[in-house]
Amino acid sequence: MSNKDKELSIRVIELVGGESNVNDVYHCATRLRFTLKDHTKANEQALKNTAGVITVVKSGGQFQVVIGNNVSKVYEGIMEHTNLQDGGSKTDTKENAEKTGIFGKTVDLISSVFSPLLSALAGAGLLKGLVVLSVALGWLDDTSGTYLILNAASSSVFTFLPIFLAVTAARKFKANMNVSLAIAGALVFPTISAAFNSGQTYDFLGIPIVLVMYTSTVFPILLAVWVQSHIEKWFNSIIHQSIRNILVPMLSLLIVVPLTILAFGPIGNSVSQGLASGFTSLMQFSPMLAGAVTGGFWQVIVIFGLHWAFLPITLNNLATIGYDLMRPMLTAAVLAQAGALLAVMLKTRNSQLKTLSGSATITAIFGITEPGIYGVTLRLKKPFIYACISAAIGGAIIGVGGGRAVAYSLPSLLAFPTYVTTGFASVVIGVSVSFVLAFLLTLLLGFKDLEATVEEPQTETSGQEKQAIEPNESRLNKEIIVSPLKGSVQLLEDLPDPAFSSGAMGQGLVIEPTDGILVSPINGVVTTVFPTGHALGLTTDSGMELLIHIGVNTVKLKGQFFEKKVKEGDRVSCGQLLVEFDAEQIRTAGYITATSVIVTNSANYLDVLKTTEQEVKQGDYLMSAVV
Image 1 (tube, rainbow, N blue to C red):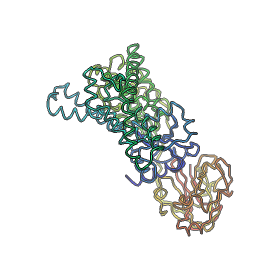
Image 2 (tube, rainbow, N blue to C red; image 1 turned 90 degrees about the vertical axis):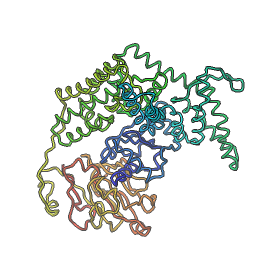
Image 3 (tube, rainbow, N blue to C red; image 1 turned 120 degrees about the vertical axis):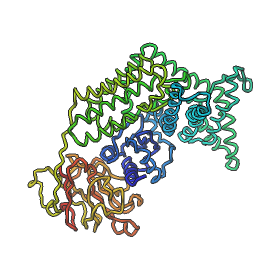
């Protein structure tokens, strides 16, 4: 993990309201998915302006920070620098639970349970597709030892899916993971599977058993672990701690395993069969309509982060009928975005947009569309619409042709080996049409381009010359920032705090204060006031965003020695008192008082010019952001 990833992880946690505001956090392929206690404490705009963050999405009760392909490294940094649980869930507040709603809870449950398994599912699915393709082409004999091993490697995660889900579900429901694994193991135990295959009838204490094949199933184990978590909680409250570690697991197994086989298995099996037959019925009613709707609206669903709700349907289809009709249609939607992105790259005159489109095209081809959607197509509007139209047409072609997947995979170019079965030709045609049509529509019909960027020749200008340029003497528009403190000026890169000194949070300066009077350096609005009073955010009327952070690691003081004079939403004028703090007491406590003044959306400006004075007082010129 690089220093940049560490700095970004620290920045993200700070801007979502701090560790204390986080109930739960995990990640999927591109997003950090937070369940926050109070969404109003999160600084959404500052997060969007943070380097390394693509965008922020609030959906399904979650606060989603879209990072892109590097999300796992940022998540690793969060786990390293906080006390948050890896893959776990903290008790949700009643207020937040009420706000989330049933659908939001369902999406949160599915995404948090399945997202840790995504890489294993995708990798095994791709291998499964290659094995199937090799057998179909005669490269591999399905009676050979090579096939035996490769088939086991590619099928294990799907065959024993209840065991994998037991781990993630136990984390989500805060159940004993080892007991959850024992429950899942009982469901896929060889004698249970053999009893199902034998066709014989059995009973449990006189109660007839409706046997189900539990391998590859999803819903029975989720129901079982949910019940287990409640049973354990109750037994832990009434059983003495001296025997709790033995009796609670025993009683949980004694109750949950029979209950699952007698009730949850048949119920879950009915749900599975219903979902599979429902989608099959839709396909039978109108394959063209099903394909068009699935392909055309898939990326809209992705925008809101709700696509996880469809993953159980795919896995269920593979388990119950042996194939899935949805995956190829989704691939049309993904490749349509890639086609639109490629056209934007060729057509735009904006150098930054050209670079972003090029990298996002490659990423989309391999299944990750969020960077391209948020950074390019949705931002330009028309390319996104063209891609959705093209995906609908491609999806309709795939639907009519009966394209299907025989194993799970991320919708992408790499998924094609899993489509080598009935309707493969329609998948090739449908996906190709989606890509090419989105490319041509975007290239020929065009879009409103962002203003072209022109690289100016760089000339050496001394700090004194820069400072001498007053706003009324410059042809450039500038926003002046005066000093909020009295003290000595230092370079930001010399601050012993990599989150700031690296420049990842923006350009700025540091002031070592001689007193504890912090005043506003601009006219604007207070957008953030940290509860501890050690930092606050300001925004001017023109949109410039400032972060003022008093000291290094002073958050650990928990507000001691700080007195806030403003609150979030207050309008302030230049020179107005913001915070009073006891600099000497802070230093005596062992903390640095050097205060950072940072333009957090520096990327929106041509440059941030800084004073060359070594000493300043409140109201003196400090910096100017040049537009």
